[in-house]
Length: 291
Image (tube, rainbow, N blue to C red; front, side):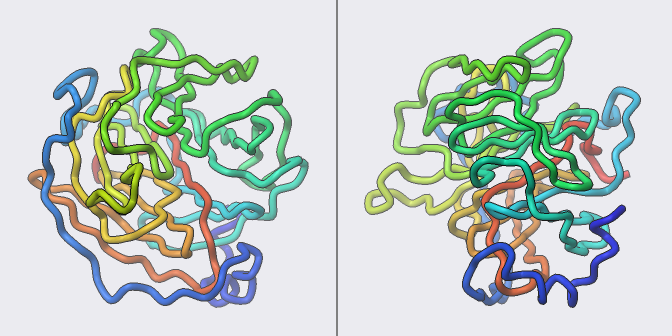
């Protein structure tokens, strides 16, 4: 594993590759309760619980989730919490605004003008299609939107969409929420587990959600449950491993979100100063619960 060979000390020296001012880590996490957010409860979702049927399929992923800046791909080991740099993106015409990882560990990434496949060891980009794509992407498991294949999905504000990974075509799914929320950064889904999204108030001056974590229906895109504000702003990336959601912020923070009895607790992860995350992703074959 190339990235995990890098120590945090080495990453400090390379932190400027992400292009952010230095930020200090928060002194602690936060806990908030879950509540309804006007979605259609139970529609296509797994509740807040996780099944124990394993990741499904023959692919057994290594413990890894990925975050990225506009120019650089990073890898986090969710078991050891070590952070490593993979490489700078190459072959992408513009900045990478988000990534998604399918059930076989293949990374897809979007820019403002194109969709790419991205090699997870070299961060080399291969063009799939030109077009405009959202900054919140994830695959959802086969059987969710298509009986036989996984689907690449995302949000344009409050509109759930599907992207054809062969043609790049975008299709709207369901209806907009038409409430006070819009997608703030990222969606993440896992086989035999829930699908999560980070959201924010459409008007930051009138709401109470700087960045909230919600569970959504991967079938319709409707909000099922709102776990309220996570205590971090600009959570542009979300990933998943073994029952925990990992948040990546534009200010360079990485934190773990644990949900027990519909209560969300956040746990900061030591991260070098100088980083800035624009997105994150994890394979849909990630274990839904600790093994």
